[in-house]
Image (cartoon, rainbow, N blue to C red; front, side):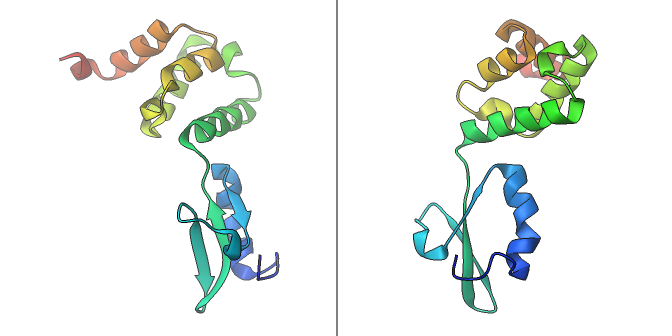
Length: 125
């Protein structure tokens, strides 16, 4: 990065960048897919966002940390809450999202679909 790692902008956005599983770069390394952040007209850093599939893996890992155990060890009600939370975050719009979540929860795709349909009965119409 052109600015120091302790630049106020870096300090401010680093927790968000880490939570998203994104990467901080020198702005000169940015591609058209990256987001360049400036401070008072000077490019300080670039943020490379993860691919959606990488984001889902990152979200699942964070959920395991939050629950303090592998998601597959949660009870049915907790797994249903995980599915609701993931749906709200768009996890099932990712290619193979249902399969990825089912694997993390230790359930079948059918079970994940049942959890989704139980919460959204109008989806089947």
